[in-house]
Length: 206
Length: 322
Image (cartoon, each protein chain N blue to C red):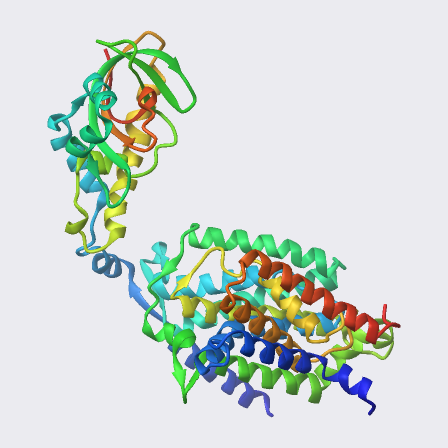
């Protein structure tokens, strides 16, 4: 086959393949269309942290531990929030405690009012849906898909991990008095009441 | 042809028939059209990879990277289709049609195959080592490309490749059948096919005869990469999801199909149809064991023994091979 004909056939084939393979759009136009109506979990969490969190009702930590020790199943069923079929119950909890130990993953507080009660403030391995479920920030029924609903947990955990914990970890010392407010998960089959782990939403060193 | 030669020649088909007869007696659900199509669909990915593996093994090589290449190619096709490519510096978005995404996946598979072949021929890296390295490289690249998360929701057109039917036959079976026919013709009726057997039979003799050994080997690994990509695209389409850990240990299933099908690991002897029979034996065995409620742990052990048995029979029948 002559070279020009070969070249022509190859060019036509490549153009046809290319034309049927790709299309081009302005990135701005594409992003505008993509973002229209898309749920923004970070914005949603920022609004919650700014407006609703300070006034969010919370159970006193000493009261929570005392009540759970007295009647674990009854108290959790009546006052805890539960997600689906599980033995996990979630609470928003607040209190003040003295720092007893600073570990890699937690800061351990002895609660003011009853120093026998200990609370672990999570400073690492902050995952899961504890805050979302405890705070009732959102209901799954309000979302068209579970990805958006789960994105709230991701955004909440990111916020704790990147904003709340770093400044606290930098300044906290043994014997400091700390006010905390956060979410806690209690499993009725395996309650570990002596070591409740709070995912913090507010941490103030007093 | 005496009885012994006939038995040796048709040992895979005989084993497959015996397996089918035994399983049909043991489970009334085995010999049904639905189960038949299920087996065919399930083995289609393995057959695609195994065709490439047969060519590689015929040249006395091995390709351990096919499972990872399958995963990366499927993920690239899915990613291009779903997300396209953003070029912020030009304020440009490049979108891909289903056809374009498939080409992208095949291009990646072929590219990695070329790299394997290049390493083996240019730098004389043993095939086992070169493709083992590619196994981890491609798996890592898949994790990077997907961020460790599946890419889902790829649309009905893409899903048709893995789940659609044409003329009463599932699409994956069509694709696999076409590839098998092409591979049989290439290996039996073309110069390229003869060269592959020649290289595997005696590489030094092939070199002295003036065959372009390196070029053929690079082509063989490229074809293996492209066929792994085809398998990846079928699997991704079938699941409507590109999983970052897709194709894990598929290379072993593929080697098993090739070995059970009678291809010699010493190279130079074997056939594509034998490999198809090997894949069918594994598929039928898998299906039968599942229908008989055999524990997955036992299934692995049984499959291992079947592979061993195939190799032992091969050794007995060809005692003089290295």
